[in-house]
Image (tube, rainbow, N blue to C red):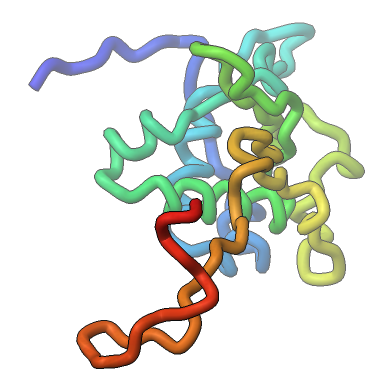
Length: 172
């Protein structure tokens, strides 16, 4: 197995405040793994001797990457992402999925360069962000043809003596 080169501008330190919070402890293992993946996607630079995350708000870790990394199902990724949004660890900044290569973007809310009011996970038991979970897009394919009632044969049996009446198969 080939070792990856470690970048000096990538990496994330989880503070004890995050790891012992009620919001983090309520997460299932799949959501914790996804949170770690989002956090490792952050890149930082130093400005005025402070760490500033330059790509926060543009972080993405796709369902395909998650499935390849953890060998889990697609629905597990969606449930884990929804749980992270509900508990206040991430916020979706861009929907994605409009064309090939278009991916959803998220803001990781545990970064230490954020203001306290942006760290939603601190207020988790009292508040949740269930309303921010993205819903499935409406599909317009087949709307005119789905769930149509078809004529049925009245008083018919599969292998019996009764013959169907009221619907003649030769008339349609």
